[in-house]
Image (cartoon, rainbow, N blue to C red; front, side, top):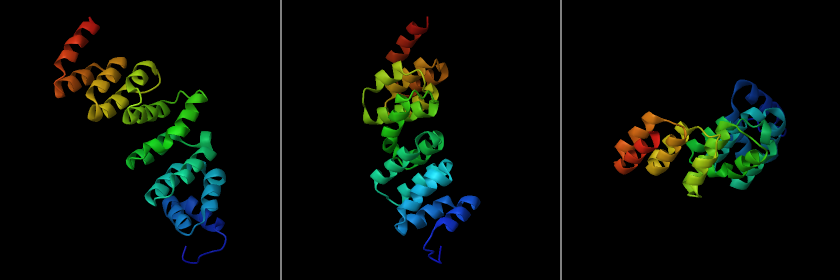
Length: 188
């Protein structure tokens, strides 16, 4: 990196081989070598795209570039680590277009639907409809996410997934005793 090579391909190969992807991404971004970042993600190792996206978010790269990078790789991209990287940085909304694209292609991947559910809940874009009609998300994961934001949505998610213990805990913790009484009627 200190040699400032005119061609970054040897550096890319070494960093990829030995797991220095975030360092490589930071170096390429700060030296305005964006086309090498695109080349790395598209041709060399699309599986490491989540690490690249995470580092670009840390480096405050423009969202348009990151979205373009994600969309250019699409189905080669591992969804779970990408969602984790964005969620760690509280930037899950960045993935909205990508996730919607996967759903429109017929994806039934639980991680795609969990992430989309979290985005819908955060944006308050008719979350109850999503929670009751989407058969692909994990009720425990999305319900836990809802607990901090809106416990009544957590009840909807847990009820759909038949997560009895979680239902009782969330209604007790948030003093939702009327809902808890209605739940008893539903289960009888």
